[in-house]
Length: 156
View (cartoon, helix red, strand yellow):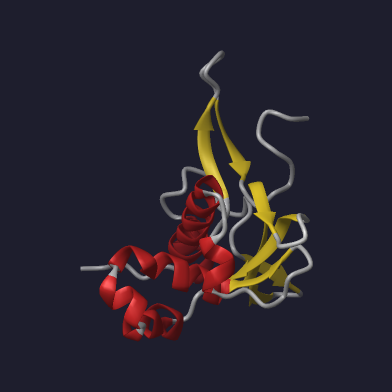
């Protein structure tokens, strides 16, 4: 039997972080609002035709339609690995100065950037936040980092 939780508890359950430490919801005058867009910064960046590098972007929460429509795409039917390309292109709303994100843009990303976006997609859609629990390799202290691009890991 599944227990019912209030939305904020459900999002933070299992994150290893205390409730209220930054879920995908915000409270405004006693009213809960859902955060639907999340900023990110790519590790390497998308290089457009003119050589401009685009690293900052915004990804929105996926809808059921976003996950169903790519299954009808012939490219996905021929190669199931293409699913993530089509899906990611549907939920990125901006990448640098580019507003028209289509599968061709995602195809031209570096592999490390695509892997980052796949993980980012999973975090915001399945876990409801952009935090990751990490352990310092030197002192073995556990803490959380925000993967949404508020600075690069290892930099101050």
